[in-house]
Image (cartoon, rainbow, N blue to C red):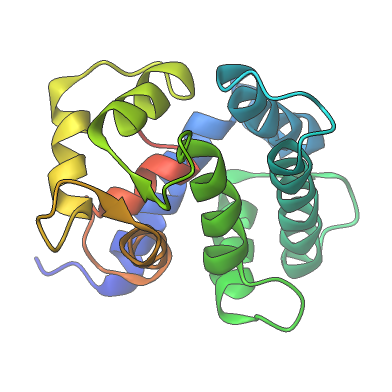
Length: 183
């Protein structure tokens, strides 16, 4: 049986839903997105007035509102099916927010602790451990996948490309999944 690109993208989005549904109630709501932003802020001990903290919180809020808009729901929560559909629509509709660019830059700015415009192995390992609670060796293997030019660091361009692949690629293990709910 051949899996279509749409099916694989749905699987990746379903994984993201499961990781974001921290209370395991089968729905996502604004509090799940608040917790996502808070995980980054707490893991990197960012003051609330830090521009990176404000950027990730703003991104999470706008992303959530875009999901609600694209899901066309009356309420303030999404089922897994609604989440998958809304993400598919939000990623191709860049009229208000480009999920891959906006989220990618906000997350990159937090992970790049030393501000050298690259994510080194130590910064990436910290992200996996402190944001997603993962110390799995295979998760760290994704560093090599993200570092496409093999220079030992993940550039901003490589990082944004990986996030695009998460939302648009038919590769079920695209490394960009790490940034939106899979570790």
